[in-house]
Image (cartoon, rainbow, N blue to C red):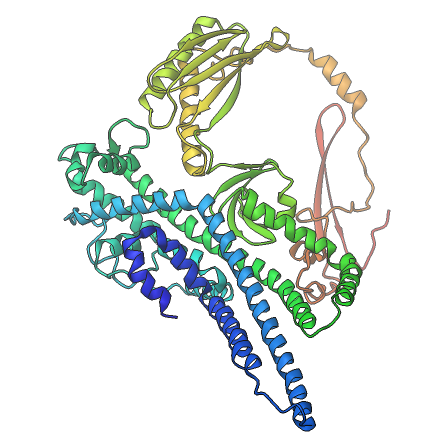
Length: 631
């Protein structure tokens, strides 16, 4: 249909708010056309054929019989056309419901993220447009680098083909898929335009980093290590847009942005772009699976509608259909319950998106793929893929790290009981100075709690929370300090870096202030070793009474000559309990040949201390395997 294209290029340009309805019309155009065609056929047949039968003579019996037969046939055709019109209306309602679910879910879950993504991409495009190539640097983005064809990755190409096939299978939600394609950078843009260059660069982590460095080195003042808002203010139309663009880099609000901050901001835009595109594609695929399930019910309803229009008894049909459903309830009851639970979990609860870091039952996972009935995670600890049914996840406590704000972590450590409170206060001052010097990583308040008394120190920049937790048995003091991070833990490497830096600073401060653990100073030099001398006569008498008699037998002990081995070599290489590919029976080696007589010559020397004089008795013997030695 050409109507959606015409409306998009006319009303869609004038009234932006109508674009969503035009997208709906584009997705539903075939079903609207089918319903309109069946409705027109039914109305036209009723008005033009059924209502316009010729008049016949009342005395012509043959003509009356022919007209009665024709009337029966026309009534049957009219009923069939009416049934097709009802089926088309039900089909249109089902497709409209699918579009409504997709749109409402998109509006609630992704509208704000998509708007923020477009604003950030627009800011980067403006900065790239006014930037220039940096001579002498190979780590910045070149003007012809993004548009140059890259090396084809077969794995990525195969994944793209698979995603394309999935997209064709779930074509009913194209209104949502168009937005995902636009975010992913697959919309049509002029190849050499700044928007196309930025979109292409944001599709790769390496090129995103090069784009960030180009922007930084293009606007940083000579001799400076960071950019300020005045460096980019002239390239934006108003001050509000300038603050939005600079706030994208200045996450800590200290009114400057270093190169690392610019790189992290651009990489965050890159990851958010990929996460949005993959999340919306997965949701589009899940909606397509839901559409397939609803279409199964549609065919049953359509068959009932056609049967009723052909003058079948409705009560008989409903009774038979109900008996069939009740008979199959034991077979499809659990599956139907799982589908309903999964739909509610995925579309109504929706606790995560693709790329989110979540915690479930003391485990950390990254969402890789969302499906209608299950979700695929990446185990952060082991790196393996984990597939979990959505019905099981609906009863779990899920902590979404990406959606969380600034997070904190409690660090517990023990100190000696004789540590004075002045030392703890000095430790607080040292750590406060540390967080002030690293204000990009930590939060801006400080509280200390000692034995139930709270002392609050509200400062301008960052926070450390120290608590005297317990004094068990007057042996040690247990202290707790909260590491209040500036952001969440979505980027695990960044969180680990900040934690290691904080812990090392705490360790250095404790060493400088002589605050040690319950065992004392770990770096103290050891004192003199004290020992007791015992008379030699007593020791010699004790050894003589406890010394066992030497074993003079000639039987050889059964101990291995080489390495210790308590299992078969084949079993160590391929365990039958882990034989996934049925290779245990094939994996075997022939046993070593038995040595021939006369070849097993062994020489052994045994040294043993005997008697009070400590003399050594050396015994040598040779044993032939063919001639046993006489005793």
